[in-house]
Image (cartoon, rainbow, N blue to C red):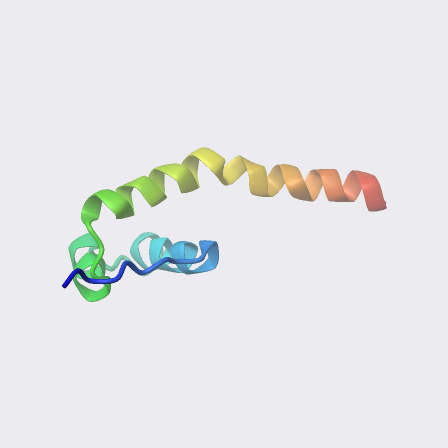
Length: 67
């Protein structure tokens, strides 16, 4: 029987990345604890850094609309 895949929300993904980047939890520990493949973690990290500017752009857009 195959194991059911866990689908993580964007908030959960950020929390996992934060544990590594801020709390310095080793990737291997996170992957073991959560049952993640390291390639999945690295893909999330790549997407996070590639799309990080979007979080700031949205704030600027909202300020322009409402201020």
